Image 1 (cartoon, rainbow, N blue to C red):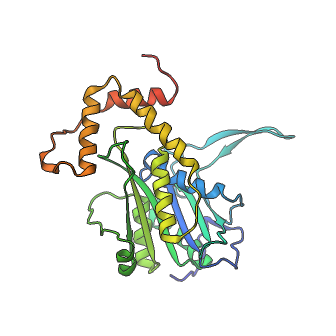
Image 2 (cartoon, rainbow, N blue to C red):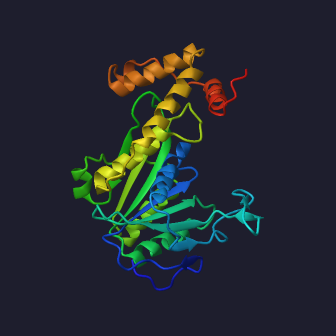
Image 3 (cartoon, rainbow, N blue to C red):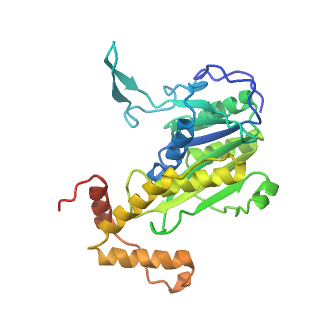
Length: 298
């Protein structure tokens, strides 16, 4: 990919020229971010080292603001005020001296408009930073049990890396989101790309899933040896499971459904012998969400 003209929506605040073998890690709020597991993983990385944005992608040309409304926040201080927060995409730097790679970490929201232009603008950041590889992370709703470790699938545009890390080639066909579109833009631009996907339980609609977030970070750490300390996520993961278990105590039909999912995960029963049927999970979603909000009233 060669840059003839920087996209007018892209502001470059200063990308360091001493990055060591940088990789670009991307996550997006929206369709590709079940339980916000992917964006929580990127926010975890950002919290390791507080740095200012080195590049920002203005949202005006990419969003319908009646669909993705900006929010208002209160800013304390000598000049206390309310500020409007827009759905920008921004990029920060995370240096990992103990690893081979520094990271440029991008966080944004899946846009409404002009996806191909948006993807090209994102990849301009990759080009200007001289990244070796673009990494996208996402999360999807799946028939998996909350009591089992989160499954993460991976893929690479490089067949050798695909084999090295034991990735299984995806043959999915159907609708895609901005994560898939960025991956295809990498293919067109001939930029190496790797993607990770976490599977989260479809019957739980809580906003966060710490186990899935940890699983994505663990996979990123496995591939790039970033030496991430993820232990503090264990407690959050245990609380998450305990809260859901509590919500299921008086839901025997849902418990049976989860047991079938557990059996599938453990390969104790062939899939064609399972009696689990698609379940109307409104009851469990209501119960779990009520419990996670701290509202235990009926």
